[in-house]
Image 1 (cartoon, rainbow, N blue to C red):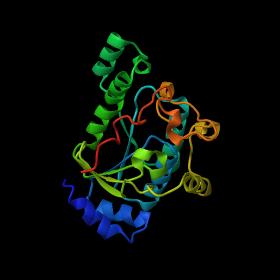
Image 2 (image 1 turned 30 degrees about the vertical axis):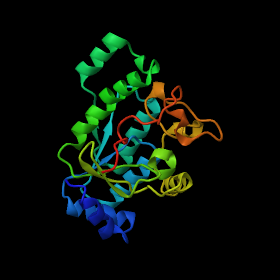
Image 3 (image 1 turned 60 degrees about the vertical axis):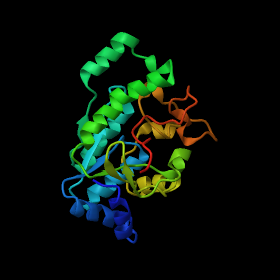
Image 4 (image 1 turned 90 degrees about the horizontal axis):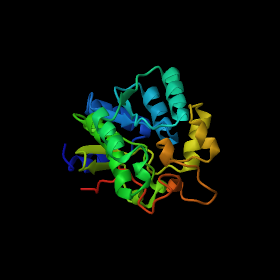
Amino acid sequence: MSASIVQELLDKTKDFSLDETLVFLAEEFPGKVIFSTSFGQEDQVITDFIAKSNTDITVFTLDTGRLFQETYDVFHKTLKKYKRPIEVFFPEATAVENLLKTKGPNSFYDSVENRKECCFIRKVVPLRKALAGNSVWITGLRAEQSENRHDLNLFEYDGNFEIIKFNPLLKWTLEEVEVYLSENNVPQNALHKQGFVSIGCAPCTRAIFPGEDIRAGRWWWESSHKECGLHSAKKE
């Protein structure tokens, strides 16, 4: 998969709706389009679009072993509503066992390096496994989620994972996401009504206060770029 394909995709889909783009990608890359969901609001919008498009797009999630019960609840409701399988990828047991044995269960609070190590084991390695052999990775990234995402395009080449990324909700606002979810009766994580905007692992996520940045609730004890390695690769 080459970065040169990005411009071609941007040109071919520039007048397409989200629905039309999903159908186009599924036909252009049969069996090799994959969508990663963490069951957040943006991901639930995309899941609804994929289900309605009835395309051959694989939906998967990463179970880090440290998720909120509310995340599992919306996972279950999503399966029941759409009657579509969701593949699950776990971290390697040996790597988790070694991490806990040598550094304990909460080493991520001690330093940014430790936190990134935990994210790498629980998220990045399983993601590599999930993306292997695929051509297009659909994400729920939105530009207003963080400063790091303002300069993204609808299609990107991710040199870290060597795959084309499609960011269909890039220009959507949070209000537009919430309206869509409400109007289409899409299952949502109950934590969203408790001030949780961006939801990750339970020990690393808190509700945000009025006026705080959307990502402030992630790794709140850090002064960092608030990324875990899944979407931090530079554009090429």
